[in-house]
Image 1 (cartoon, rainbow, N blue to C red):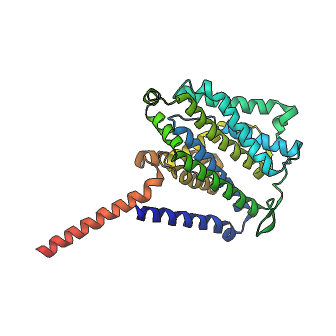
Image 2 (image 1 turned 30 degrees about the horizontal axis):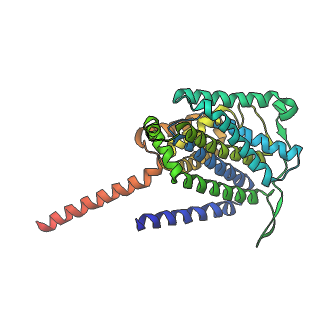
Image 3 (image 1 turned 90 degrees about the horizontal axis):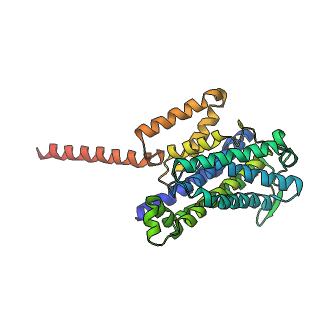
Length: 338
């Protein structure tokens, strides 16, 4: 137990050091911006996984991203509100919308739930595409201001409009969100969600209000999706409801692939999958038309040979070496005995 805690602690510290150092070593605005998108993808994939804790798959995660992005963008452009208010507002509106939709949605399961979520997502996108007076229609929102300058104790004035500063801001926010999701999953609430996933009828028979807990789970995941969307709005400083852009259905499909490739059964799975495949997408940008084929091939290999996901690959390698080492030691001992 102590060894496992030590390994987890060491891995966490090592990851934090790498995340902090890589942008400084690369010294590139392009890669700093790309790594910011990777961090946001980690948050979106981890929050999408939260829905699976109740045994459902959502294909409408991108719709709540859109709500968060447009809410933050409109409040910044029209009301002149600061980053510290617009981002939470976008997340809250996305969460409340999911809570309102949760009751009818949670009356169905499986493929029917997935269909409802994707229809809702596309409806929100089409609404944003056609509501020109509010969202700018096909032109979208352009000129979203930078996060601005904040005074931090011990650091002085920090301009988060700078690529590097915004990267660190996003990484800190994503780390906080991941910590919250982890604590929720390992709390009594999380165990209730898992009980519902195993058998909602059995959970209901022991007094658990299944619909209520499902709604809480769905709205929690959507809250963090909205937060991720708001961060994207400030990252790109322009958003559009174009079906081929940020908020198309393919974005949700990619998030699902990230989650499956990483390993949906482990909390770290979506993090590993999102980082790896987001970087693959960046490295293959020159052959963008073949990206779905490349990512699909990786997903196929993982599903066929590592069904638990890439997050379990290190433990498999260690187990293989342990067995090999034990076998060699046994053969050596037998040779000595002879």
